Image (tube, rainbow, N blue to C red; front, top):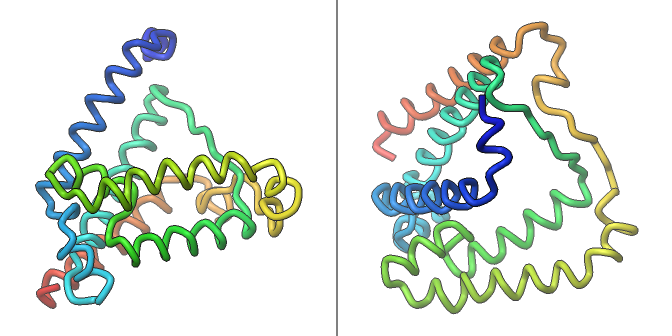
Length: 186
């Protein structure tokens, strides 16, 4: 069904731009690009960011597997390792804590007029990506393969026949967490 889209690079770019704009708009409407909201999350006082992310996880998880079930998409799982996840999460966390934005929210905040997101966020992303590209060959040989766990998903690891049993269980836990956060006024 989506073969025409897969073969049309211009349409893919146009759709990417459109979905990126919509994503940024929704981040802004959800107040996730506001510095105060992000700092509130980091200080465990405002859980708006967590609620938006958990909602996106449930929506994406159900949506991707529903489209996969219809044959509209294929999963392209990427291999992971401790050598990629630990340093990556540390660098991300330090930058997030220092600046108050992640890559997506820095672009949304800049689009809304926050100049600190331009200097620290967007320019920082470009410098960081350039540095990573420069050292990638050495990292690939030495660090990135440490603790390799392959391209396994939770569904691959658990002994289940039907992926929907995992999807509905994870979705139920996330919805329960969202309900508890809402009841607590967080």
